[in-house]
Length: 199
Image 1 (cartoon, rainbow, N blue to C red):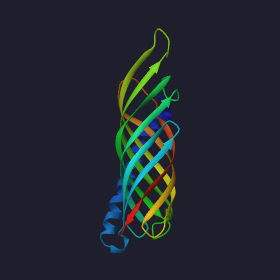
Image 2: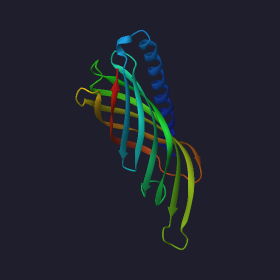
Image 3: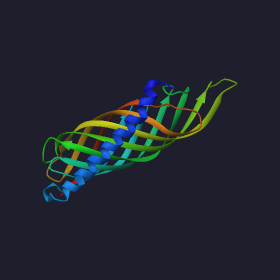
């Protein structure tokens, strides 16, 4: 086991804990600040080199310049030969909890944040593909995926509709694995969400 793999789990758990503390403290603040109320409902797609995340997300104001979000979604995995095995593909359902800090009190334009996902994936893998001794199987994994993100909320007219491109960086960590090892590691995601804001 490499030093980098030993460091990944403490980083992931630490990021998740910090995220939960941020959300908790801002929920307490939001109870005293009625002017921060807003609700976003949106669809979100994030692409990364070895897959695509599809999600339905809900955002709500937490403070003067902060918001929290929850996402439920599906992770389509296509590691190909970039994982541990010659071919890895599959997917699974999961969700995330996130926090954003907005540069504007309107919670439009630029933001930065962090998010932790948990995915329950089933990955089919193959080795020696096309050979007489081709080896294949299925691995079930629970993936913890902490990321930091930056993006922009672009209002579309006066009806509350918006488009929000974003970029995120973090790690995929297989915290539970039932079967042969499959790929994990650093991840870069480019995505966008489209939705409606309710005040």
